[in-house]
Length: 92
Image 1 (cartoon, rainbow, N blue to C red):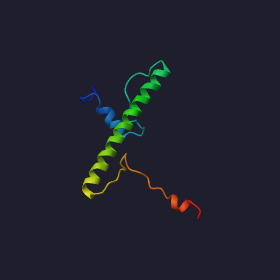
Image 2: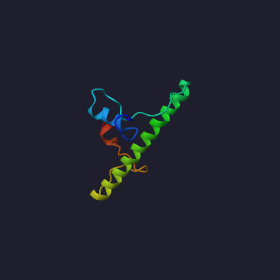
Image 3: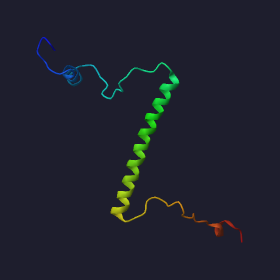
Image 4: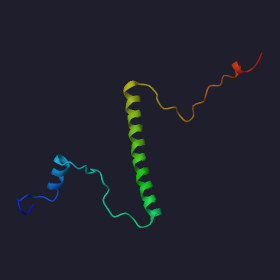
């Protein structure tokens, strides 16, 4: 960087990712791994739970938009009764 007057701390790394022969991971969680594996596992599980909650919210929003645009009910309501076909199951 100093020799060729290249500004910015990440410019070289960006070039290596773009033009280099090595594979550099783009989404690396920064930080030092915890020494306690249980704490690290809890932290990983909390992150996964957060991602799952975001996914659920996205699906709920998608369902709400689809119901509004199509005018149909996609999600079964909590108070809905299931149909029973007891007449077919009983011998005559």
